[in-house]
Length: 100
Image 1 (cartoon, rainbow, N blue to C red):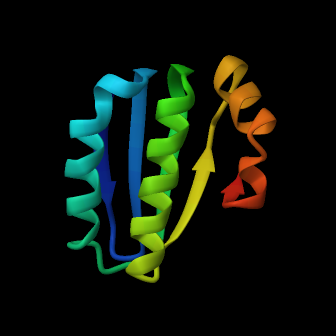
Image 2: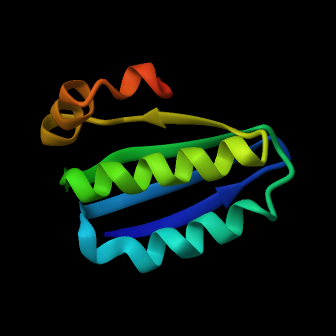
């Protein structure tokens, strides 16, 4: 999985691409650390270019959500399609965070 971060004063947009799974845990730890620098109110996880996600990837999104909530940030998922959207739906992620 690759990612890029785009920030403005209100929103931190993290764009994911590739396949998101267990091997990406180091990247997620870096992302969680970078949330401390964000002064806005919202973090958008853009999943448009994400090809696939497994249960470990879903767990890491939950870890990002927990870290964001500790900093009083709201997480929103956007652009999920195909297998990624199915995994989010099966796992009832809409009950945990906003999904566009």
